[in-house]
Length: 270
Image: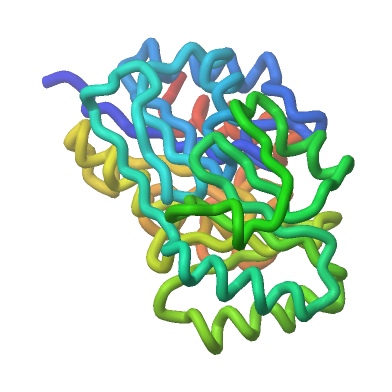
């Protein structure tokens, strides 16, 4: 009987990507070897598709991809696979915008798949968020938005971040999930309640008929926690947060030291 394939799920920032946002030669080589051995590789990221598609292409993948931490899952090369897009209600978004404006914030962004809406003009963030985007619009979000959105980002002063998160937990706990970005960004990311990477990854695993015990997932940040718990082998990067390392016994080298390649080589005898 042929060896059963593993599904290998890769987070991007701080995991697959080096600190200068590239995929190392050795990582690429081992991922390719894993695929040649019959294993299935997918990307599972908090990023929108527009800013992860270049890595999808670089690895020459032909699998579905998890974006926005599970709120958007689709197959870039097969429209018939289906699109799973879980959105935030416009009314909730408007309430969040109104509340955020009472705090010391730099900006609020709304994303609808690959379109980005800025509350205020913002050169610094425009550079980051306009990667591959089809459309960037600037203006009062409450007036511009006319339907549900994929995600909302609030860029605030560091001391305001926790206050805003407390408000979200107190007022919108049943409808939104929120996370804080890693330093140096004081950004709160808000998506629909119940959305996380494990939700997206499960859709992909079900499609390939792969049980959790045959999933290897790599991550470094708090938005990887659910995915790492769900996978039979949830692997923390050497550079992962304390919390991520605390939920798994499996720790590999850092993103700067080809952690993924070293783990796969050993685990899959490549």
